[in-house]
Image (cartoon, rainbow, N blue to C red):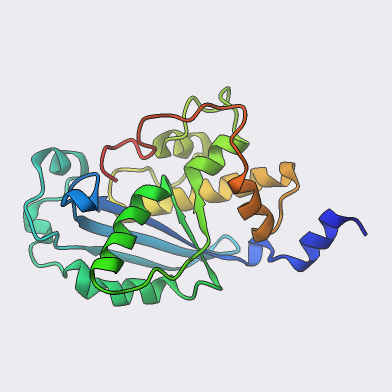
Amino acid sequence: MNWQSTIQEIGKSLDKTTFVIVDLETTGGAPHLGAAITEIGAVKVCGGVVLSEFSTFVNPGHPIPSYITNLTGITDLMVEGAPTIEALIPDFMSFMGDKDETVFVAQNAPFDLSFIKYYLSVHKYAWPGFPIIDTATLARKVLSREEVPNCKLGTLAAFFGTDTTPNHRALDDARATNEVLHGLIERLSGFDIYTLEELLAFGKKATSGRSREKSPEKDQPTS
């Protein structure tokens, strides 16, 4: 038995892996500069089947800039009666589940993680250490520039023909990212990748064949 087939036998099959795809809307680009979360959307999926969804507005504690409202459609009135992020953390982390069972997925994951980790820290919670998959990074590795000119969410959603069109709202963008993820997973068979362990190792390899796009991967400046 060769090494590759042994790894695939002992590893966790991708079709048995639970992914939680997360998207945030925010009032700005950096939490340490005062930006806050206005909306959380998340989709939990295993074997291509959606198990549950999480969606809520978040009261950011300050007015939403007009350009953000123009981009997302989220107004101060919409978040006025929403819970604060401090109140939402327990429910959201319960939805995420156990780090040994759940894989965190996001488009341009460092952005979403910067807010999640910041507010966990502020409110005295530890980051559980979920395995992380960034669909933008993964797309750069499995799609050629002839197929897609960039790896923004809108471009990837159009390429894979997702049922949900990204629209700068958290749950819809999480749903679109979920469909993009599964389109990318189908492509991974061409790289002989069938387990979570192989995918995580593949994701750490240096990107080849594409240059890294400098514009935000979600087609928007803040989320």
